[in-house]
Image (cartoon, rainbow, N blue to C red; front, side, top):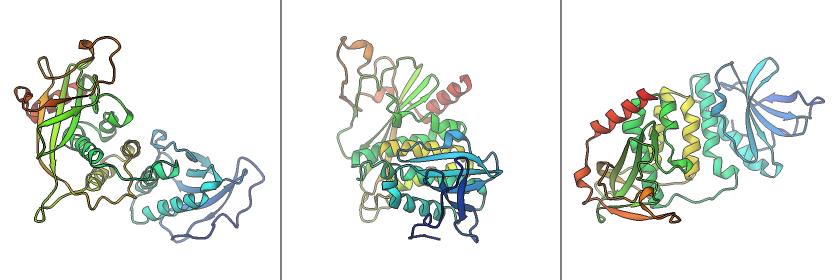
Length: 332
């Protein structure tokens, strides 16, 4: 049920700071959503649920809106609270979106996870961030990282731990850190010169890692007779996997794609890709790279390119990477 008028207009603030006045969103709806107003006249949307459904680390931390798990009236509630009244129209849209996305799910835990996931999707809109699509380079980068997550990290451990090992979106030098093993993921246009860009002196540096791998996938634009995919297709495929295996990982995943700048509101249907192969390299002694220990003091933010032709002696297969990941996970 989508509400266009102010659903909080008929509520009066409670007389105590420890309570909230509330009314059901839809008495016939599958889940117990409530419009709520607190002592300070904050607008709230509450979802009542059974105890133990929410892990606190799943909760988004956004500017202008708080998301809390609270005890209220002998029940557990997931509370979405508008902190800045200037955003009330956007907040109502968010609330309607949250309610709508839960109508088709069958389990209470799935409803809570869907509500939190949808909040992360609104991350940039709610914080007043940029309103533009990912560039082609950014799309390729995200696709490259998600393909490593799909093929190598998720099959090796729990979904929650796998997403935690995806460190690239937080600004870490490596895209994936699995104990003593690190993976840098790259995606390149298949028809371009066989090279990839390295954005810092730390990206391929071994540092404290026993093994560093460089995973490169080739992407091209599909022809009229080819079947392509979008970055949205890959994102949704990973979401479905997390939804079906470990709901606790979904919030962390949404946080990471929001950090990258991915938003579901953006239409990528005109930006199709085809995957045309991949190569995996063992970044060991002799690999063509710049390492921190080899550059003079005071030199920073080094950017360079490496020729994949000169990397051919360092090619390894997926089994080598998967074995290294498995060993690193067992050591954790």
